[in-house]
Image (cartoon, rainbow, N blue to C red):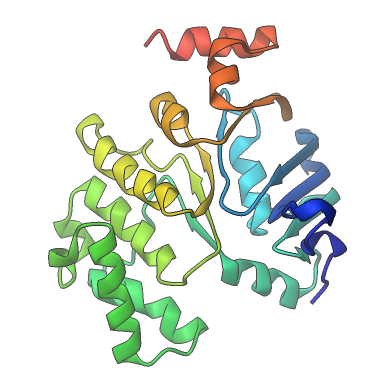
Amino acid sequence: MSRSPESRPVPGGETAPVIELAGVNKWFGDLHVLRDVSLRVHPGERVVVCGPSGSGKSTMIRCVNRLEKHQSGRIVVDGVELTDRTEDIRAVRRGVGMVFQQFNLFPHLTVLQNLTLAPMRALGLSRSDAEARARQYLERVRIPEQAEKFPRQLSGGQQQRVAIARSLCMEPKIMLFDEPTSALDPEMIAEVLDTMIELADNGMTMVCVTHEMGFARRVADQVVFMDAGRIVEHAPPAKFFSAPEHERTRLFLGQILSH
């Protein structure tokens, strides 16, 4: 495993970042989707990433657990630099949970089976231990009564909470959310955001791509605005919403907050 010196505590009692991107570039063919992106996320920090469609925000967080491969720059997650080494990728993925727009649940498995599959196969938990853990996290996302149902029997909001519980069953240090409410009907968004707020309140390190600005105001320690593959603005919510520095940020906020 490639351990980075940045993973050690830094002098002065400050914590080192648990996620660090330094000069990251990513292309899809001729399309330059990430342009010299640099970002630090510290343990327990909640970062909300926003921006217009095609700005690179989802690609950026997908690079953090190597669902996408960056071509230049450095990405270090919990002290492990992401390289082509399979063991480094596996080490990072063990500590990083991810929740997608679509729920990606196995339709032929019950909720409980969806939650126990990875802990049993990847972590070597016994069935009884995996089921106990699964039921614990179903309680945490407030749907313990759905354990024996199949995904098709659940609402979209319930399915997304199952997806969150599934990630939590791997007991990650970091949670990544890629527009987790964008596929939901409006009345189901609040129940998923409430679950995410509870995770944030309990100290989970989170990076969330979302257009839910109310969530950003309430939960985020830092808000990142991306456009055309670059980080244009990076500020605490109070400053981001009340006094953004860049005209592009002001235009985006004017559009999104007017709806």
